[in-house]
Image (cartoon, rainbow, N blue to C red; front, top):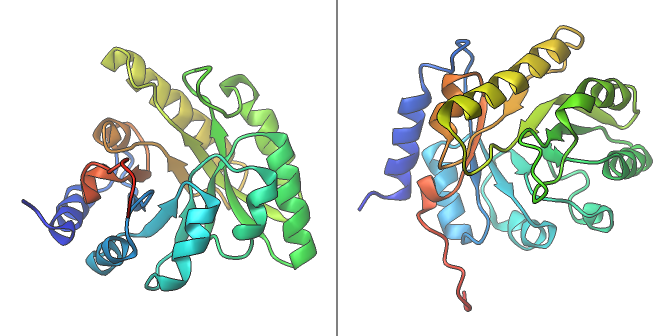
Length: 226
């Protein structure tokens, strides 16, 4: 069985040639339900960032983690921003105006700027949050003009089912939005698409950030106990 270090090193080697646009690909370890020890092993192995899904879990772990950029990738309730403010290097999941405004407001009050990605519901799935693709440009322009946040790109999740060609078309649509925004802002850096099951397809068609958990840590244990 491969160790966490071996898995990270294998992923880094796989990503070393970049994406379809010859851009470096950021390897973000999704650390939901992982132990501090396991996360620190991934950090030592060279992941580019670590990311939590739940604010309280971030709060409980973050002081024990080794230095590494901290990202947040889960659905964020506005009343949980307090656990993250000033401690997160990049929020991937700004999925609605209410969150954008509150994060910006709290950031201004704290005298900081929070880096964000706008989450697009690319597959128009009822089970997923995020802005519609049709409003992505309007949302970007609105968010870019919002003091307290810095929009650095977009995040999306592919549907778990669908023909390969359909999924490729969705990635290409997100890449087109990313390129449109990049032409308008020097701050645009990231297209965050791809998880353990689909990152290869996403990188092959333009993603430059992947969020992987089980590929690094193995299957999560959802049972009780530590």
